[in-house]
Image (cartoon, rainbow, N blue to C red; front, side):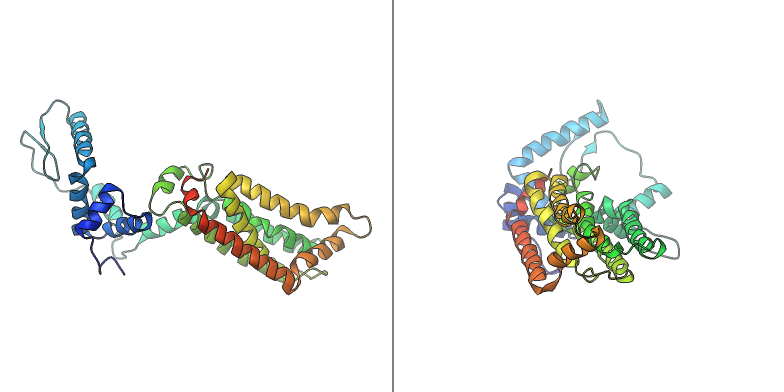
Length: 322
């Protein structure tokens, strides 16, 4: 149902006011209140009629007393009114009209109305990793692999790219969520769209940037005995979900370090320590063992499903993710 097809009843407003409404229904109601004035008024009356009403009244009166100084105020209804007569309102300034248009969700450009605030919200939800230098870093990795394969004539460029590619989205997610990455993390996590929902939104944004670029780079490189260019997609998804699942216990950065470091040790250590073959050839063999064939890909798919189930089971933890 859309917000135009239903309205909050008095019972629903009362349950929201006393805190007995389930979290998912409370989020849905809060989203609906952004568009429905009548329901917002009904919920406001319910909150004021409850136990929080007296506290809100005291806080409002104290704020008004501080803002208006010694002038007496009359607190009643929906808006406080100063006791003395106030001058008639003047026409809003251009800056005020601009701010009002932004708040209402539409940025008016003469002759070309648009929705720039919506685009800004999408970019904010995508996360710092996508907005900042991380996207450029992914592009540099992809172009660097192609340059190694064709410009420098490195035969093991594709195996090296396939070894590094699954770690790239893991690092992108770690850089996208948390107080270390977002200066307004506390506010975002406390919002109805915060927590696991925001974390998954930023994970999808990271995957949408990294998967096409790295897969295309792998297609452009010579095989050199390595698996196909798309063989890393399921492992990359599974490792990303595994880092998110671990983040519920140890934090996003530590979870990314464990999963990314574990993968690199598993595929790079045998290639670097084997004296019987060239490192590039040994790396290609190691990647074939963990990426090639339906058995390996099926194991990665099962791992991704298990990690997704772990995320769903512990979704409440991500409201307080360190």
